[in-house]
Amino acid sequence: MNVVIVQQLSVVWTKKSRGTPAAAVRNALPQALPVISHDAAYIYQRHAFSEAAGYSHRLVEDQTANQVPRSCRDLGLTLEDGVLNVQLSWTAQMGQPPRKSSGVAKLTSNQWARFFANGRHTDAEGSQCYRREIYNIALVPAATDDVFTRTAPTTVARLEADLF
Picture 1 (cartoon, one colour):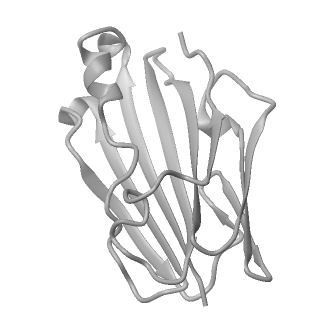
Picture 2: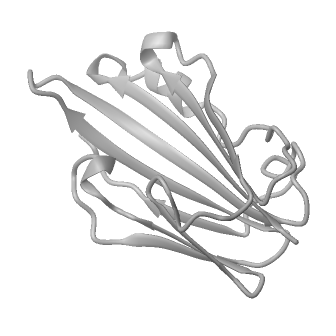
């Protein structure tokens, strides 16, 4: 039986760190981290990096399940006959501007995908922040800490827009 692992890396910043040198620090953040292994059919881990915290790493969610859910955040997940179908579609919660495209991956055992998304968010007072999401999704026989760091992804999809 295969394990589905979803690792989400969220980066949040404001206008004050849009340009260099702050952008260089933000762009140097990792695109994958070691996985905390669990004995489960499904593992979801969300990591956060924010301008407010000096881009230090925080593990904010670590969930497991005995079944693969149909969705995880902005991802649709379908596991049938040993194939994991993954879809990332733009939603308003991802931020502006709207996008019509979506990212799709079809994974078999020992494959993984990386999806990129970003968005601009405005609060009631008009303050803006920006967010980049990286989703690493794997279908593997067993969870190992290096599943996203030992090889390149099988599939890469970008659902990014010019935010400025």
